[in-house]
Structure formats: C-alpha cells, structure tokens
Length: 165
Image 1: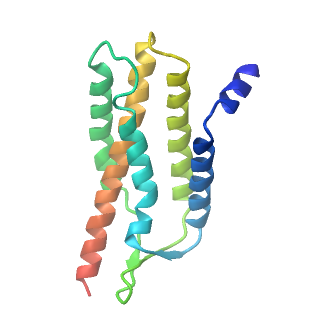
Image 2 (image 1 turned 180 degrees about the vertical axis):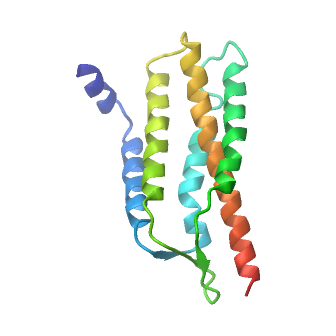
C-alpha cells in the first residue's frame, strides 16, 4: 500500500491533468458531436508525442529497445489505419460530424494506463531490467504507431469526404 501511495504522490501534476482531459474527451465522445478536423487531431497528437518521447529515455546498452519500439510502431500503424471510426462532413462548415461511441473513452484509458505503467517502471530505475525497458519501448512504439495510423486514416477520409462536395 505504501508503494502505491508513493507512486501516486510522485506522479507529476501534468499526468493527472492529462488523465482528466482524456476522460473528459472520452465522455464527450459518447455523445454525437460536431468538431473541426484540427480539434479531432488533439488526442492522437498527444498520444503520438507521448509515444515518441520515450524513444531516447534511459540508458540503453543494446539496440533492442529501439528495435522493439520500431517493430511495435510498424505492427500497430496498419491497425490504426484500418480501424474505422465513422463520421460525416458538414459540407458548409467543413466540420466533422461523429456519432456517439464509448470507443474513445476505452481506448484513451487503456493507452493511458499502459503509458503510465511504462512511466512508473522507468521512474523506479529499471535500467538493469532489460526486459522491462524493451516492453516499455514496445508499448510506446505501439501507441505512436496506432495513433499515426489513425491520424492518417482520419485525414485521408476527411479529404475524400470533402472532395465529394
């Protein structure tokens, strides 16, 4: 119990603010909504930056952490591209019209928990635990790859739907 308490109190404030934002965005996504394309890209960009930021963290005695990051990113990039998230486009305003879904809330929480766990492992000084470092880089790579893929899919679909005007 003391370990959990120490982890929680040593978590930076920005992490809790990010969690609150992701939960808020996930709850909002449960209702039909209209938003600009740029606003729809905020959560993917946050997760891409978070995933890419782990590439150079920590001492690495081998290339395996980078190989794990790259392999996971390449493996999940197509999943992001191929996971459809339906939307229409308001041709007058150019805004995206999305139906409500709990997908975003579940996805945001899963990715947050995985990235948080990676951060905790890194903070505990897992430098002598090569497997933990490799798994952490794989989670970060998978996160970045998935959201890069989903961003590509969103932008391509948006462009296609705008061209249908």
